[in-house]
Length: 257
Image (cartoon, rainbow, N blue to C red; front, side):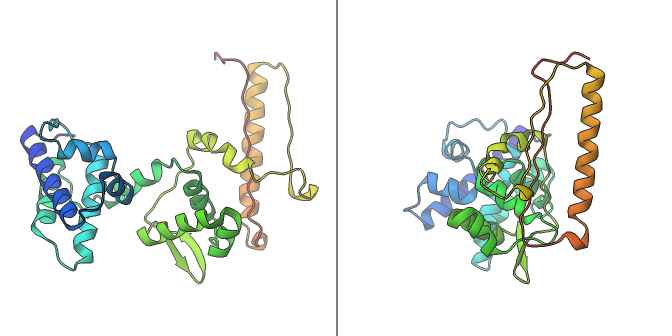
């Protein structure tokens, strides 16, 4: 990342001071609680406070999460103390990155790592063209889902307009293949054969085929996906049913092209 050993050590010390100042104000908070509140890895906090900790490098994501956390603490008190100011300057020197300008990178970090199924589903519902109401989120995901929604509203990842919860424009939630595959079970728990036939569909096809046919089938799926996407985004398609479509195709074998 280009930071020198001296600049990294300076940054480590400024983060350590900020963390220690925060702990002095809240002596009853454990590192586990601080980690949960800030989103910073607990191991990173422990190493930061350890005098023998390795200062040769610092994880940018953890640095930005902690810097954001201590900065927001200062803003809530309506002034920026010396430790927060030191953190800003140290980040600028170590990474040539202004803390305010780093918001976009931090936002991407936050949305790239979703280990909780409720987080994923709340963000998926909030991506609907006209958002979703808090009542719908609670109805679908219960109080736990509503709490996640409120947390994202507070952090600014989500916004609420006319009773609809939507994604803030500055955040990006990419549909990465690995993430979708990981979250298959989260969607399938909503699928039930007890639901009306006109509101559900499933099929299974399994056969020995050649590579060219496999490629053709993939194109067919891509074509159907584009048509469904266009249909659900038409103005006359909008309603109160939270629809999802999940499709996957591959082979049992390892494919060699």
